[in-house]
Amino acid sequence: MTENVISATETTQLSNFDHLGLAPELLKALKESGYTTPTPIQVQAIPVALAGGDLMAGAQTGTGKTAAFALPLLQKLLPLANTSTSPAKHPVRALILTPTRELAIQVEASVKAYAKHTALRSLVVFGGVDIKTQTPHLKTGVEVLVATPGRLLDHIEQKTLQLNQVQMLVLDEADRMLDMGFMPDLKRILALLPKQRQNLMFSATFSNEIKKLSDDFLTNPTLIEVARSNATNDNVTQQVYQVAQRDKESLLVQLLKEASTSQVIVFTKTKITASRLSRSLAKSGIAADAIHGDKTQKERIEALDAFKAGKIMALVATDVAARGLDISELPMVINYEIPSAPEDYVHRIGRTGRAGASGVAISLVSEEEEKYLTEIEKLIKKSIIKITANLEKSSQKPTSELQKDGSRPSKTARSSHEGATQRMPPKKKVSDPWFDKPYEASKQTQAVDVRPASTRKTAVAALLGGLVSNK
Ligand code: AMP
Image (tube, rainbow, N blue to C red; front, top):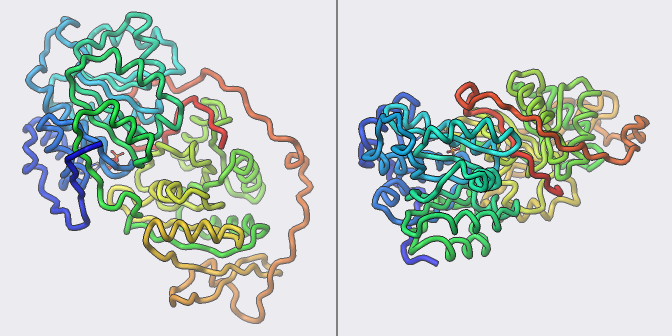
């Protein structure tokens, strides 16, 4: 696939942004964004992209990958920046494709922030909103277009967009795009682009499909891997509570009630569990809501807005629904069920401890799930602190023992060590008829956030758009 390989090890020398050869306009914007030191992916990718070569980068959300492609892209377009009012002077020169509308919105907001001292224009287009609202903006001309594949093709069909001047293409979260079935759309789009162009591809994983995509669309790419691609962030404290499946809910309630934070994402494996759990948490007095592929766009946005505003404490999410969430400084994630694919664990806990902030990732692991835990520890090359959660009969509060690694259990696990602790008896079957009803998927609606990107905060909860997964 590639002859050039750069491996950013943990010893990567982090330089100052000034050493990356970026233009003063961009450096000024970075300073204003509060960035002082480039992240490893930025150190590795920016020089390669500035030199004009194709790039295949392994980097997850949260590593600073957006700036890693947006900065060189803007720099390369700077000589073409102009203030002319003629749309012809502002053809689309860089196309950034993302799998979800929310990622598209975030990426474009970043591009705008980095380009604020230049005359380069950017725009985001995505599905789910009336296409006519996007057309006038496109017609005024933009150099950098961020788009989801489906809506981009809609615009091409309606002849509201031309791609014959594109000289740079970015495929962001390429693995997600393949997972979500965008390959045919990608092929159609790529066939419409000039052959002579620079391609930058970013993917959290290097699956065989990604390698194939890279072989098909990139020319002699430089491969960049940031640190160990499956490494977990050292800023995140990871803990495992060993708990019987039937006791998980009580333990979760307890952990949430004792948490010193008001924002927690709780991960479940399935949409059904996510819905049930959020209802159940609400019954226990914890403000909660669920986001998953069966929720309407309106419901998702409402849940996220409520979460961001602090109106709900626990956002219960499936893996796919949580993809692309960028909530700055999210202090805690809880895995109600650990994922069977160890890479998903890395993604999940990557929701916290972002951009240098510290975070806590707690996993509730039943005996049946131990095998997945072993796989996860193998992948992250780390042993996670184990806490055995016992639930006290009288208060139903969990207790724990000090672990073999000598780690001190949390406040929750320490509660009640006077007298004998007993395992909680099996819970009575919940009588709420809601739990006995078959799960009904909501119908998708077209209602979405139509506020202009500029009025939305960038580093906020954002959920993938429109596509329903089977998870
Ligand atoms: P990304 O991986 O592109 O989604 O970026 C994750 C977060 O890190 C975003 O909130 C960025 O604004 C932030 N970020 C990116 N690069 C830097 C940097 N060099 N210094 C500080 N924060 C950064």
